[in-house]
Length: 274
Image 1 (spheres, rainbow, N blue to C red):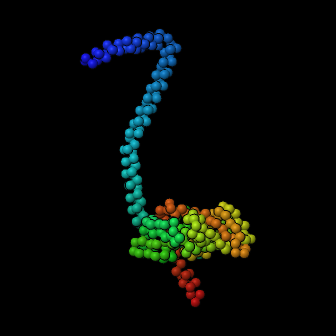
Image 2: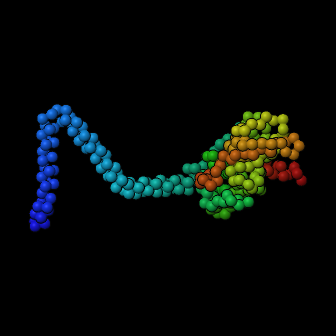
Image 3: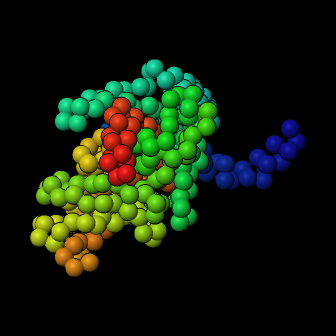
């Protein structure tokens, strides 16, 4: 109480001034319509600003709970996705190619290990012999061709991706229908080389490249990439630089493709070479 009394005595002049100022403002606002409207406008604007800041503060303070809720929801969705990916019957798709009279069976898989900065890159996926996955099966994603299975264990498989010099994929330029062979020069994991296309073929930057019907591993017309640049090499043949449609650093979910005629065609071709 003594402290309050000393404060009033010390600042009584200022307090009296503020009191009189407040009374004069109230009297002015009440007796003048113009001044009243101006003051009310300022009050309304100030009130709106204050409400907005309070709402921002409330939203900010609730972000932690919102983030926790979203994290729980994402965890639930991921667990459900993992469950569905593990159920073979739910994610097995069949496609029939009327031209080659071939059934293609797609099995969903997830990449568990990958490399993009090596010369001989490899991928590992979470399906294997237990899921009827074996060597020489193609692997694709929603973005395009990924690679081919080379080794399997009970629950995992090693995939030879396009970004490996040992990979060779039969491809087709959609616009001209010309075919060539895709390989990797171990320079850029987002690019590959298409060779074997004759110089008389009309090639343009941006042309779409897909798998050809000559491939016994992949279904035809699976996206591979687009033409980035080209030049004539090896006499009258193009060397075409291809921007790959698949970004291996972002790749997570893929499909293993099984062709029911691959073994028959491969056996026939190998037998004719003997």
